[in-house]
Length: 461
View 1: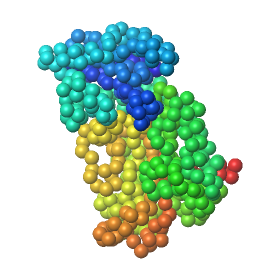
View 2: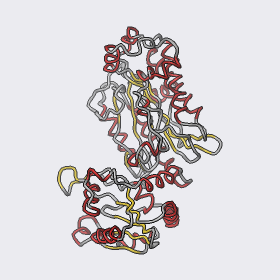
View 3: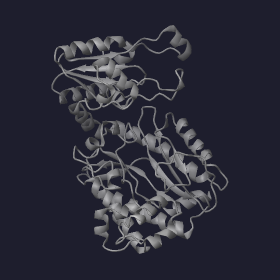
View 4: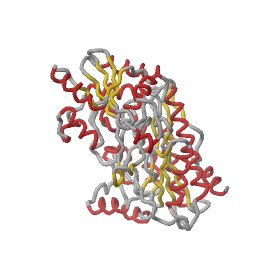
C-alpha cells in the first residue's frame, strides 16, 4: 500500500466532493473456482484499494459524511484461519496503517446502514460488477441484484472517476514498474518463438515473468497466431513457418497497478515482404496516434489520426478507394480497424471500466453506435496525469469481409475482389503506454522493440 497520508488525503478529497450521507465501499471476497476452498487468485476491488489500501478479502468500509467518521468492517481471523493461512495483523492494526481508527465486525455493517437509511440518509455506492457484491447489497440495502447497478450513486461515480483519472507521481512510478516487467514479457516471447512451438509455451513463459516480477498478469494473456481475433484467449495452436504471432500481455504490480503492451512478430526470423508492408503500416498508424497525444486534444482525434493512416495505406494497396474522409466518416475503414485506439490504464488495465465508459472515457456524453467507433473506450479531451494505451491495429477478419460483401456495404470505398487476396493474413497490433504531461506526453517504462528492424534483431538474437 501507499503511505498512510496518501490514503487519508484521498478519502478527505472524496468526502469533500459529496454533500451528505454515507459512502459505502465494498471490498471483494474470495471467488471459488470449483469448490469453496479452491479459489482464483484474490484481487481486491480497485476503488477499495485506492481509498483504503487493504488487500485482504471480506472487508467493507464506510465514510460517514454527516458524522465525519470512517469505519472499516471486517472479522478477525480464527485459529482455523491462522493454521491454514498464517498469522496476519488484526483488522484494527491494518486499519491504523491507512489512517482509520474505528473498526467493527462485518455483521455490524447491515445495522449501521439500516440506521442511516431509516433516518433518511442516502447511501452512496459504486456499481457492483461481481455477483457476490450484488448479493451483499441485497442483504444490506434490500436491493434486488438487477436493481443494484441502476441504484448506484452517480455522484459517487463521478467523484471517483475525477480522482482516479489523474495519476499521482507515486502511481505513475508504480505503473512504470508494471510496464518494465511487461516489456520483459514481450522481449522473452519475441526471442523464444519458433516453428513447432505451442502458443501455450509462450503464454506460460510470459505469465512466469509476470509472477516473478512480484505481482502477476494484469489480464488473461492473448498469445496467438490468429491475431485477427482481437481478444483471443485460446492457446491451443502450434506455430508454423509463415505465421505472424500476436502477443497482448501485461504485468500487474503487488500494489495492483497495470501494464498493457502488444507486440506482433514473425514466427520465422524475419518478416516476409507482405507481412512487413502491413506491419510497417501499423507502426505508422501508431506513430500518427502518438504524435497527436497532447493535453487538451480529444482522444477521438488520436483515434482518427491512426484511422487516416491506415485508410491511406489501404488505398495505396488498392483495398480502399474513393474519398477517404468520407470513408472514415461512415466507418468503412473499420473493415481493417474495428476497435478503438486505446483506453485509460491504472489500477485496472481498462481503468475504472466498472464505473461506466460513458463517465470514464466520454465525460458523461453518449458514445457512438457506429461499428468500430463504438469500441473506442476513451474519446474525451486528454489531461495531464491521464495514463492511457496507444494500440491501433490492422486486422483481416474473413467473417467480416463476407458479411459486408453480402450486404454490399461500402462498395464505393472497399474493393472486395482485391481484399479477398488478404483474407488469411491475420492481424497486427502494437501497443505502448503513455502519460499525458503538462506540455505533451511521455512513454512509460523501458523501450519495447517496435520497428520491424528492432523486432527482427530480437528474433535473430
